[in-house]
Image (cartoon, chains in turn purple, brown):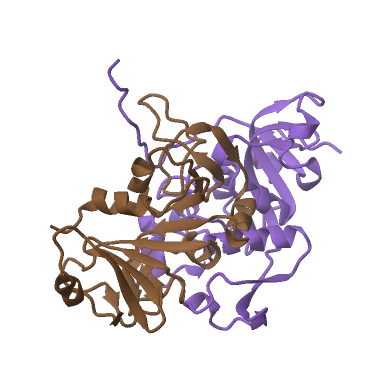
Length: 234
Length: 208
């Protein structure tokens, strides 16, 4: 089966529909599927729910879909970098399901592994636990969290082969792995598609079984907080 | 003289022992890395890295290499990268020895609030709820009072909680307190701070 597509628009052809749940990889602006997000914006599809740790910034990442009001709901752990997000949320235009970062990652991992729910101590005694089943194990209280089963996963990797095996680079791996696994269909954008056989089979971060479509493209890879130190004088 | 930010960070660094895997929060906790000295400490960044190095030299920033505060950083010879689910599995699984983090409020039962102010500040909890529920030891580093001079060390937190009964030790500009049965116990006073000063700035019950 051919997995390599020419561009983001073609790779999403026949998949997008209003009201769908999309799991997106990335942490902050690091490792986000920027080309696929742009193509989703251009498609005009609306009422989307995104499971994504962050919501980008106003003009990059998921932020571009907030500007066009294509997003109905976010499932995220941190949205502090996006003024338009805050405005839409505080005015009630946008739903937000705050989910602790580790719980979000595990909800995606669980969904991808066919696990509908799991118990965790995270959030016990906080607003996160309200309305959720509580259960004791060995004298400690846990809450039930549900796996995420997304209609579509969009992720960004460093390299792929034509069978969809993915390799990530440094901290850009982040949510891309769990997000990819929890989608009924997963589309990956990469910096380079390499010939079959040129990735070390011992060093594949995500096997191609999880990846249905792949595109290669040019990435801006914007830096959110540029922090540096001065070289000491010799 | 109460401790300044760097002195608080230096005091917090004394909590760390050779061989520990540690997660440092944003703000004063980040400064703790400057005071670990010769101790063999591995820093975790919950976005998927063990062995976090210092900020890069100008011109060497890598957009694929950031910490949990989204700042550009560097790797070390010991560095390992992994995905977010693996990262929080090691947090939830109790593999991280300690987390040092900031707070808006802490109370005498070890409750911690540091993620939102209703109607004002809605940024999110990020990984803080997972960290305080999962790591071996939770150490809070913060100013003892807010900018209006009101105590941040309370009988009961007023803001939405990050975790309930999770804090082990509180390090402030005035000293060090432990969460114990019935309240907080004074462990240490900052240089030139009297027990009377600390008690006056604390709303929480202090036990002997």
